[in-house]
Amino acid sequence: MTQIVHSAEDAPPEGYEPILNRTEGENFSGPYYLRGTGDAVSMGFRVQARHLNRTGVCHGGFIATFADLQGYAIKRGVGIAGISPTINLSVDFVRPVPLGSWVESSPQVVQRTHKMLFFQTLITADGVVAARASGIFKLNLNKPVPGDPT
Image (cartoon, rainbow, N blue to C red; front, side, top):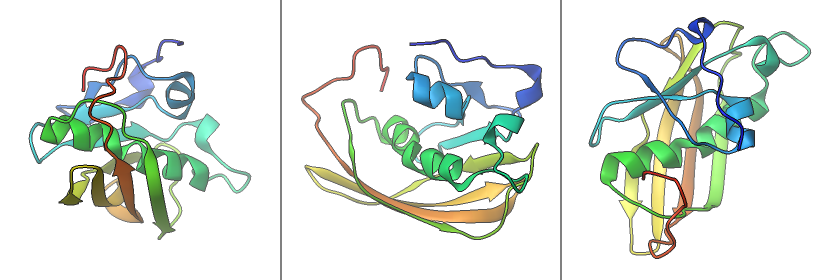
């Protein structure tokens, strides 16, 4: 794993802390930050030049990756440990996200069963809704992730 490069350019809002020990893909698509505890956990990132598509706004693939990573925030919020692969992910793109925007989300658990966790979230860019996402994660509670604190 490569180390995440957090910089002053990220300028996360107050209370956000860097998320460490992530995969190379997550490091490239981030870096990501986390704020809060319990049900009020938010995750965010700053749109940088590497996130832009040919039209000069954040590529939808990065927004979709961010939506998929909401499982990390949810697991932290509800105290779930272990691997949680994505079964389904749906993202509706509402508006373009320009360079320099702070993108954040506070995912909500819709339903939790013994084997699945259903979630939904609004993804905002500088406080304005940019995308809506929902998904299902499979809960493999007997398979902890090495080095993952959640």
